[in-house]
Structures are given as structure tokens and as C-alpha cells.
Length: 216
Image (tube, rainbow, N blue to C red):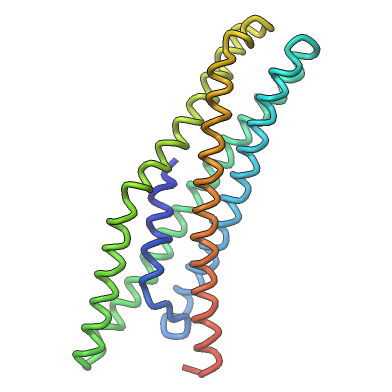
């Protein structure tokens, strides 16, 4: 999942002066896309939790109702896959809307004759780039952690599909426990992304409200 790209967008935009009144629909669309992506990540967090609980059930029910537990796990894993795709789709929309907003903003800035204001704008653009660069290592780690977790989930599903026995559940104990441990880090990472998107949308809403109040 390209979560690192999404968070990079969110972090970078904090340095950009949102102006809903001056950019019109583009800024409103960016706000809606940001809020939608935030909701998609919240649902993804729920699905990660559900997948971990399904793994717990497999281990707990291996001698009682392994088939039922496995079916529950497959369902949770499938919903995790679907939600991952939903996040990627929402992220693509946000990137598109953001690109439109920034292009609109840059075009309007070229109309400004005051050299001081143009310089201030360029400094904010550079700050956004610097913020992206400084965050890149952490963002790459987040993506790597998530991909590692989902890869383990897929492997466990494949192994159990091939041999659904209590003995195989025992043999997979290390892998299952490892996946659950990775899920803990993944949940923290997703929570960071949700927090970043919350702050981003709040900044956009504040800017919009301020400009509507002043009528600018």
C-alpha cells in the first residue's frame, strides 16, 4: 500500500496557505477528498483489528471449531484487502485534487506584482518540499511495515487453506504471533496518518471559515 505517499501529501500541505475563497471549488474538493481519505483510514484501522481478532480466534478454536474460525479469518482478510484498495483509491483522488489546488494557487500567485509577497510564497513552497524530504524515511518505514503485515496475513491464509488442521495452526504459531505483533506497529502508523489528515482538514476548514467571515 502506498501509505507513505498519502502521508507525504498530507504533511507537505501543512506548509501551503489554504485559501478556499481564492481558489474556489479546487480547495473545497481537496477538503472533501482529505476527509474521505481520513474515513477510509479509520475503516482500515478497524479491519486490521478485525484481522488480528480472527487470528486470535483461530488459535483459540483450533480444537473446537477450526473451520468456522478459519472462515472468519478469510472474511476478515478479504475485507482488509478491500479496504486497502479503498484507501488507495481515496489517496489517488486526494493527490489529484491537491495537484489541481496547487496548480490553481500557483497560477494566481503569478498575478501578484509585489515582490515581497512572491518571495513569501516561494519560501512556503520550499518549506513544503523540505517537510516532505525530512519525512521520507519515516514514511517509507510505514509503508514497509504495512506491506510486511499484509504479506504475512496472505501467507497464513494460504498455508491454512492448504492444511486446515490444529497441528498446522501450532506449526504457524510463530508466524501468527509475528503478524499480530506487526499489526500493533501498523495500527500506530495508521493512527499517525489519521491524526495528520485530521490536522490538515482542520487547517483547511479554519482557512475557509476565516475567509468567509472577512468576505475575501
